[in-house]
Image 1 (cartoon, each protein chain N blue to C red):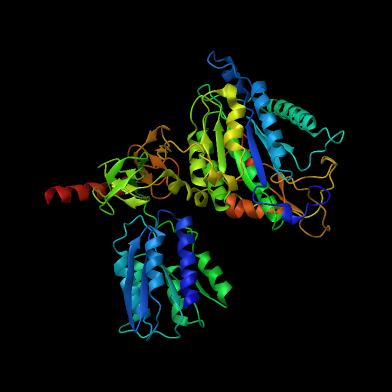
Image 2: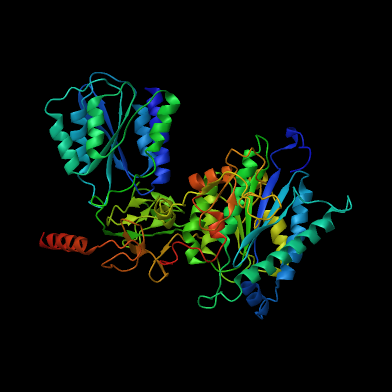
Length: 302
Length: 316
């Protein structure tokens, strides 16, 4: 942290700690920039994102911004405004820009090297390690909570585009519940083609804002209008409301969303059709099915 | 009395937070009889309202009457459900009409797990009940210890294999209605605007989840309710302690930082535990992150940040 801590009375209600989770999945960004509808590439995205980071830092002297990248094979911290060294004192804004860009380049190169040769795409789509990045963000926020009575109000902003990876469901839900307990809102801005059920649930449960912008060229405007305000001021603003949160579960066998299913009483796995045996925990259901048939027979007799 | 009631309220809220699909019912022991205060319910508010209304104590306590009432009460629970009783007992004796040993045998037969938190001294009969049925007996020393002992009962205990009958339970996952839709809800029998959930089988409107549809009896839950219990089933393995800086040359010379919160490690004396490491991903974490990960987050950030190590990949 800084060499001398600022006096506590400066930590007013509008000082924020914003942890931004960036999706750096090269499969997703490659697909997006090749689509004819939108010519939106990762570098254009950074052109919107970095001025947004600078504007957050300008809103309040004590605002604290942390960037975490969610890659395909790894996650890591990219930038922390508290530990960033301002080269040529006074030239802070370009220094932020160059530091973020150089660290991002390092991260993406390392991410690609780690995964070389071993990446199998499931049906052509690849998800980013969102659960890992979210867990890192929450650990960092806990560290800020521990730093003393006076600290900025934390929140998390997720800039995601990759599709949801169903194998991350349990980890993402654990992180969401932990954020709910610590009262940390999770805002989401989806830059991909489809809505993300994980992010919708995250924002709904933790009280954050979920947005899927219609025009990606105006992304900076969306950022500053919706996501820049601190938590205290949000009660005065008309922010996008949740349209309809899909709470339906997906069955473990086919991954399709169902609105009525069968739940194993031992391990809580969800199935769309009755099975003889649970595929997750191996519990046997054969005797209980006879029970249900007996009950039906008794009811039909009555 | 006020301390006990407040402790019970905290326990009920924490219990529903950890076990959203469970039900709680309250029983009062007074004047030698046991009375049912509330029926088995799935939401904390009705239980807490009933709890806050009752405040006087009088007469003797009868453990046997209480256990008999509970046996009848929990008899309606289906076989796949776990039945438990938590008794907050302050009396030093029990006045029973018949042989309490028979009642204890009945509880054992019905697979009811009894636990007691004593408020005065240790009593042999309470210890015997808990040992026979597989529960835990603790005695509180003061108010904060009492709260601690109560909250220990909130997370679910490990299930005994013979007791857990595996069943496939049919459940519905209703969608949330759009704002502005007017419907008559089946729980309050009055017209409500917006919000609410629609039962997928009979299309009745219910106000909150989890609940049982009043018209067709289908259990209605939302997927976060089931997900809240997954961390009990897939816990994070405990991390390994690292007491001193390893001397092998393969480690980097630069000071290490905790993978979770980026705090720098290793400035304490060489005898104390400096940091911990995960057995699966070998990332280092500080002690504060260790506590947070195991008590609240239930994910290891290191394992989640790797693509290879996924313990539940088989079912995905």
